[in-house]
Image (cartoon, one colour):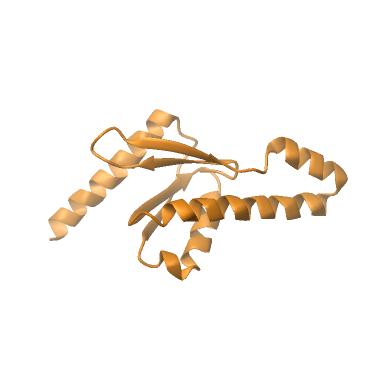
Length: 125
């Protein structure tokens, strides 16, 4: 994920389902707002990120385990918002830094992460 979009990948043994959520605060809108004022651009960007993160939070509420990953600090910003909200207390959320990954690399990363977690949980029982 980054500040512009998040790829949602639901881990399963079957083909993994993927969806993309895009922020409403586009690069073009950023440039137009910046031309008017830098303060206004930052305020609008914060509002756009808040809306984007709120939408992602609504999706995340349906899961028991969530992995946030990507090349920017957007994943950490979202993580901090989720951890501050009691509605996410029962959800295991982990953050991993990655380079920019292709769709195929993202699927592999998710599969390897959750496969390792399942093996670790099986050996702990």
